[in-house]
Image (cartoon, rainbow, N blue to C red):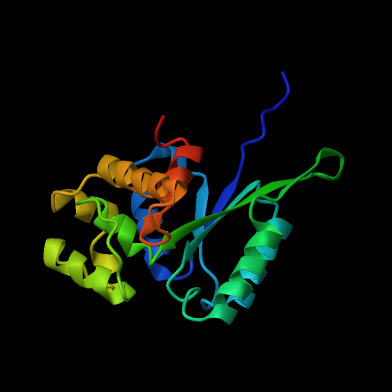
Length: 205
């Protein structure tokens, strides 16, 4: 019987928040044991592109890029530069078995930031937020969340949210609801596609 090659996956976040959150999920979900969380050296689009190319050269089959839209929408040039990068990579599939090359790249957006998905553990919202800090402050009021490496290191995020009364299933459901709202044209802000990624990773049916 031929040996089945395991699909390898890397998830590129834009900072420590995503890295620590994904590692906290690996403690609970066996489906994530083969996944590597990663982040660029800084949040520039140039560094994100470099991280994508590094993942391709290292032979990853699935490459997810977790994108915070807050700093992409700060001005027309930032948004245009991001859209150019997204057009270049999002949905890109390459399959050349004879050369041992096969990969797919997916951009996963959250507006304004990953903390919105954390808020979805506790409640749904589609309200506009002027700044990411506003979402962080709401999380702080609900569950005592702090955006700091020390907090992340001492409070595994997924488990922490659940202990505070949050639900991963609710986060997925609320995330999907926000995406459906965007598709209907209800608004173009306050949404998270992270639920889509988790479905593709096999965490939900």
